[in-house]
Image 1 (spheres, helix red, strand yellow):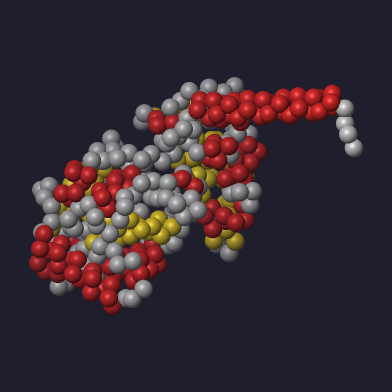
Image 2 (cartoon, rainbow, N blue to C red):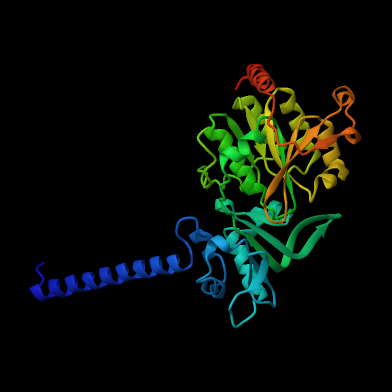
Length: 367
C-alpha cells in the first residue's frame, strides 16, 4: 500500500520530535545527577533513588565528599552528619513513617523477606560499600529477635575512599596489625589503605568482606581499589571465609573487618599458626579498653598481633607496639602484655620465615 508523501513527512516530523524530547530528558537527568553529586565518587544513582524525593532535592548543593551519614527519623527533618556534627537539611516538612518504610523496601529490592537475616543485625549492606542502619519495633519469637517492623529511623553511612600514603603505613605492616578505634573513626577506610599499600608492594592479600564494605563489590567487581595483588571473598562469615582463603588462595596476608565473634578467633589462631600475617579492625576507644574487653584479652593471648594502630576522634592514628613477655609464648597470660610507643617495623628475618611457613601451609591445604 502506498501512502501519500505528506504522511511520511508527518511521521518523520514526529520521530524527530520524540528523539529531541528523549535527548533533552537525558540531558536533564545528567544535569540533575551532577547537581546531586553523582559523578565520580559521589552517591551512586541506585542509592540516591531509594530515598524520598524531598530528601533527594534537599541534598542538592551539598558536596558528597563532606557527607558521612544521612539520618532519616519519623517526625523529624532529614539530617546529614558532616564536619563533625549533625545538621538538618532544608526541607519544609518532616518525614513520615511510610516514607521510611518505602525507603527500606527500595533498599531491599522490594523484598524485606530476603534480607531478614541482615535486619536482625540492625543494618543492610548495599552495593558500593554503603550501609543502611535500621531502627524500629523488634519482632521477637521464643526470646529471639526475628525482624523489625514500624520503622522509626534509618542511618545511611556513606563510604569514602580516603587514601593514606603507603610510605607512612608500610613501616607498621611488617607483621600482623590490629586497627582499633571508636565507631565512625575511620577504621574501614584505614584498613582499605593498608590492604592497598601491601598489594601495591606485590604482597598477596586475601580479604573477607563479610559486610560488603571493604571492596563494595557489585556483581563480583570491587568498587574500591584494593590493589593489584588482592583477592576478595564477599558476603561470607569471617571465620569460615578466612579458612577458605587460607586453603585456596595461598595468601601472605589475611584482612577482615570488625572482629566480633569467638569463631573469628579460632580462624585467626589457625592462620597465625601457618605464618600468614593478619590485618583486622576492632571497636575500642583506647588500648586500655582493648585489654579490658574479654574478647580482646583472648585475642591478645594468641600472641599474633604485634602492632596496634589506634584511631582517635579526629581520624588520626598512632602506633602502639605490643610486646609479649617470654612466658606468654608458653602459657599466654593476657595480663602480662606490655606496651611501648616505639614506631618500628618488624623483623625482616621473621617476615621471611613467615613467608616460608605460609608456603608450607598452602602445600598442606591444596586448592
